[in-house]
Figure: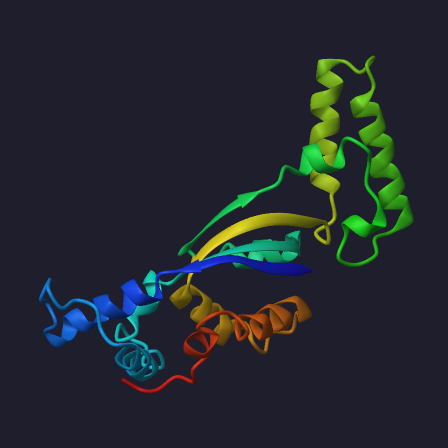
Length: 196
């Protein structure tokens, strides 16, 4: 599993917007001093229940290569968008290899999938047979298959992931949560929760 931060944006806008709750509504003096931003963000970040709503305005674009079983669990988080590579275009051109999986898969499984991929790609394969083979290959692709996706996610969603998954039984989640700490404003995302 791999992850790479491509871009992070929105901290200044988010914290200046958070100041609106404190009566700072002047268009002439909307920006705040850097030390005020740091103080306010450190105060609000650990207080869940709506007080740290400014985290929703800090956006991250992250490139992630993860196994299908991890993506299935990630899909429970609603406040993110994702674009994925095509499994068919990536794997079906030259076949599957062990390196395309997070964990080793049975050689028989790999050989059978590649046999069906070769038949699918053959010029003589009929349209009906291709449809059958496509369903067969997709239906039997192991969940350890690595797929790359681009995520757009906000800091508050990352915070929820972090606290729900940091001690998860899957190593992939523990690794991702450890990486979240290293992100810009990772200290705000992972600040220990305070009661309202």
